[in-house]
Length: 85
Image 1 (cartoon, rainbow, N blue to C red):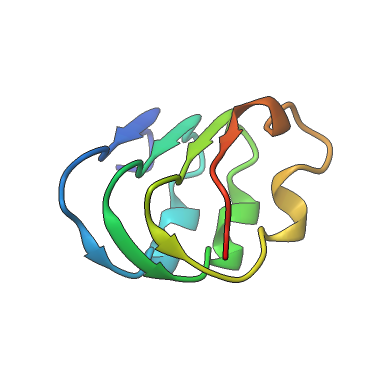
Image 2: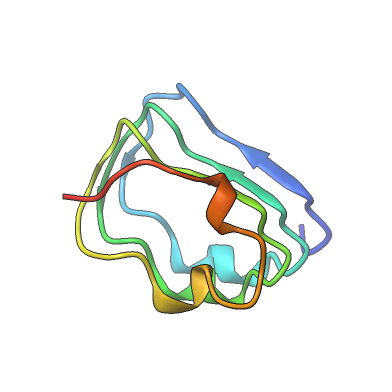
């Protein structure tokens, strides 16, 4: 899975937290968890996804803040979708 380019898990009734192991998917460009029941915070390991261009997290129950490195030195900001409580 280290060569995975897109992970689209929208509308899958997922619950629980986002796994820190997602940071191991170094080539991931699209990470989509829209419209699930995810809770907790966005793991800092997301910072290591240097090719990430789209991060869809809306319609979940996530809290906290976005890891600082997600928007630094890359074109991710245009693809960030959603709000945190």
